[in-house]
Image (cartoon, rainbow, N blue to C red):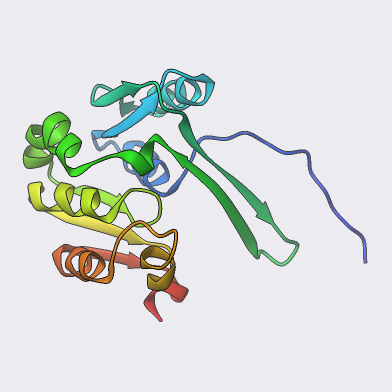
Amino acid sequence: QKRVTRSPEVIPGGVVLNHLAWASSLGLRTGLLARLARDEGGLFLRKAMRTRGIVTDWIVETDEPTGTSEVLAGPGGERAIYSAPGTTLTTTPAQVRQHWKGVLAKASLVSSEISMMPLASVLEALRLARRRAVDFDIPPNQATGPGGVGNARQLRQIVEAADILKATREAAA
């Protein structure tokens, strides 16, 4: 069997950024509410978002490192994702209220993910939003187990708060 390899590429993405870019390409006004560093990764993401029409006005700059992920894809489409969440993992519910309470209340749809941000902070963002979408892309035991981002009660509250829930097959099971 012939082995196909490609050189690594650095591309902007992640669940939320992908959703925002798709919505922006359809003519919808989109923006990211996040904490990003002033580092190379943060500058790269800001530039990529502006290029795709994603509003960056609500990004809060921090000295903590910007999160990154490495996606390894196999020949059959299987993949492994290794992430270093950076500043996303330290976002608190108080920071959500302080920086984004007003824009969350006005947004026609708020989308979040469950994998890198603490569940308490995701839950706070959903509480402040009028309409909520959640991308549930990791199994519950990974989100709430050792090294996870929250507990089972928070995860249940997030699922119940979601108007739209997009779960991977593994997470839904």
